[in-house]
Length: 326
Image 1 (cartoon, rainbow, N blue to C red):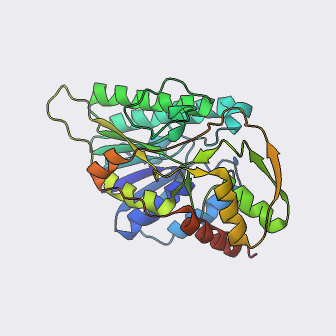
Image 2: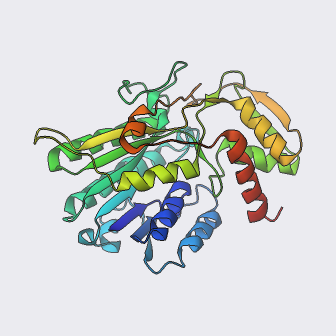
């Protein structure tokens, strides 16, 4: 197997690359190394991968037509995991063009690369729990309609799923879409709440808490996600007859929504100090709740996330202190 991982310097991407390399796969990683958050963190992640002889990295902006083909030969690739995206719900309000460029134009170029890859066996791509919109019920099932996005970010993820369905239908490319539910952990993203809370609490600064009485998230620890991804990469969707479209979508969550204040308390406990809190109203684009029905992934891949917030947050905080020498 030779696996192309886009977004290889990202949070999930670099952890997946590491897991694939440790099991002996050939991995080609690409990333634009943009400055949405500190590129030094992205380079530090790449340094963890650089010691593997079977790893090759190329800096590529996927939205530049032909850039991926110039960096990587399509015929050399047997599997693709597309994790590259412009992340962040709130930032999509500020800079919508970045999301259209990365999540639509960039992904369309990945799909065209896949169409030209003669030896391709499977394309796995990242979607998001945000496709379900602003709901207070649950759990959310893959069969639920996803027609009411409340942010541009979620709209681009719904569009990515539609693009994937069309390419799978037209060209028979086996594809698996993964709706990730608030993935967190060591080597994570600085724009996410658990990171911001940790950073500010350790500095003695005030944290902003949005819609504290309403918000809950299905926090999913990175190790549980990577364990599932390793198996999913190896398992393209099967078709029974020529009319079937080789495209499946799965929720990857923890199936246990956690109130926002429980997250705050977990970070406070681990940091050993109480946060100074500034309570604020719900922000544009935010959803009240995420809650994954994971029965489909359990049946297909024996997906069984085990890490609770009380277990995962201390691991992150310990990593954060070590990484920043605190």
